[in-house]
Length: 127
Image (cartoon, rainbow, N blue to C red):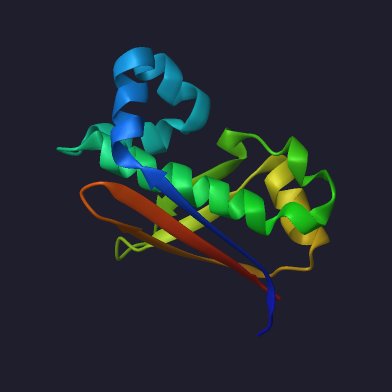
């Protein structure tokens, strides 16, 4: 298993909280899938969970950059889901999946973390 590409991102949770306050569900619909919105809105601090998903999406986008047309990838084409044990998984749809395949990647590894003020994610694409 060899690393094909890597991406990392850090998001300020307070900034996401202000975004949610300003744009509400309309704003969330632009950046999160229905499943992601449902998951985040079920949490005590939804902004923390939204922020870590935004960090994951941006990290994935960065990891896909060597695939040429990755600039056309939209927010909803990268999704953070959970496996049966609750561990985060990265699901790629549409142009994100096409870019993933063009890179020759076979698996996307995702690591998420957050504190009370920051949320971070690392994506490693392996082939």
